[in-house]
Length: 525
Image (cartoon, rainbow, N blue to C red; front, top):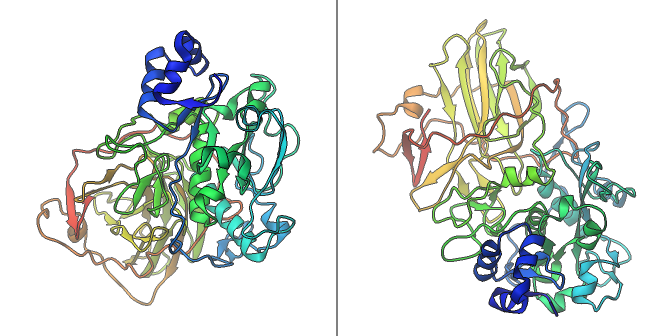
């Protein structure tokens, strides 16, 4: 092909070479033609390889979705799991790792890159090499200001949360030679570079917010070099960390083989009521998740987790055995981290009070751009049907912040009784024609237990009685602590052994009953 092309024009230019291009992209002739005709942002380059060139989706004027603070929140300390801080210095910001030691790497490159010998050179710069600019909020690319460092750290925290269930290291530190490159099929250490760039060379040609070759994450040898990096253009998305992070995860998703999540009316589904799919557009909703098209009017039913696994990105081994008997034992007071690593994952904790008292139990997830909507179930180990469920409704505060994703309660627990605290991710069906299951409700959380001077006894009947279906009910749950107050640690240390593998993913029981809370329908246990 003479130049990158899409749509009917690409089909016409391919002519009798359509079959060859389809083979290159692991599709049938019909699948490639259908994708080109239905997805105007899907292009074939001069050699017939497919890549996505994103529309300029981010607004370029108006208020940013959420103000940037130099230090967004306290973080669990790596050693003691008590509250600590991530310092914002040049050295610390460019040595962030979410999962050091993993053989898979996603490198967030804010420093700029020499682009040579890639398909980007051939398709957008007449084969000429150039030094692509990195990230900057001003004209000085020689150093990063305090505000720029804060943005970089915030972007890393958000992207790290998106990939927290996976065995991959999201890092801001330049990888050593060979870490990203895959030499052959036996080479299991590889990854992708996401270049966050204000460079105008490609942007002038594509007028897009990002570019990425489909499936490039696990390409081998020369083909991988040809199809790196994935691009995120700040000239298209701006310099707000929410927009940058959503774009980074979206473009990396393409390198992992994923297509766009849209609807019958738009190629990019922007979500509603606080939720959006990552492979749609996540700029305007605080809760963004991986998806397999389980929302109303979805046009793409591909299983994100399975496709990413096919390209080398597997879910982490579960830190728990997912049984009551093996549940981690909590002491009073305590605060420890955990991960909901798959839709089927339920983390169990045991607690046996030494005195009858009022106890506060809270679950907190990521503060910004979370993926996990938490549910807490509490019951005596010998009375599993005597269950209290805490699952407050999601409330959108802004395009970047939502409450109701965490769970908190204060209740009286009796001395000598062993209680089970079950932690899981949940989905939601609303009456505003948006729905999502717990498929993408995965990510990091922190559980905190301590004595409290105030007792708020939650009625099991109020929260879980399946006969209550018509009356709007306000559950007596202590929601004052529901707002998440934690961002991600640079490394979440789980103080227990790692046993077993992540459970198979299952769908929730969609035939179960629901209770109406305000304008929401929540599942009954």
